[in-house]
Amino acid sequence: MNFYDGMMYPLEKKWLAEKREWLMQFVKGEVLEIGYGTGTNFKFMNTDAIDHLTALDTAENDSVHSDLPIKFVTGTVEALPFEDNYFDTVIETLVLCSVQELERSISEISRVLKPGGAFVYMDHVLPNDAGLAKAFKVINPLWSKVANGCQLVRTPKALFERNGLEIVEAIALERVYLIMASPLSAFKDAVNVQ
Image (cartoon, rainbow, N blue to C red; front, side):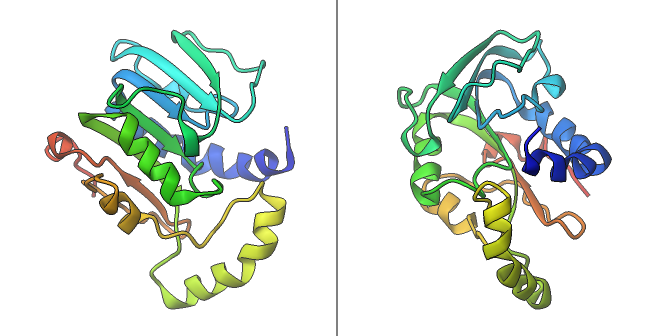
């Protein structure tokens, strides 16, 4: 386990796992997971709803195992090696905070997503609260060094919209400020979160 995974483990166990499980209800059809890492999301996916799962990361992880039919692909989100309009669902959890080119990444996600498909997203963003935002900005340079390039100060919402992804549901949760969104008009009735 690397340093970042070690830091995230308590948060994952206490809080993030529940949020991942909720998100996985929207994952179906031909699926692309961006940044599968240790395969944390796999156990929450509904095998009956998924036709095929493609898992992309910058390096292979031979220790990842699952009962799902998975095709592992090495690559980056900034240059997805897939055809246009290919996936029914693209899922990202805690990855866009650390990509080199955020807007290019979002553009690529939009490109490979089928019309009517779903981008299921969970990540932290710069808080709206001015005091917390200031603290995040102060901490960010050090955090980025110890957390594999993770940026605490990103604001991707406008980039989603500029790249044709409609935000259906965005939720700030407790003090971690994760956003969960399924930018798909067809999911508006299905997404019902307090």
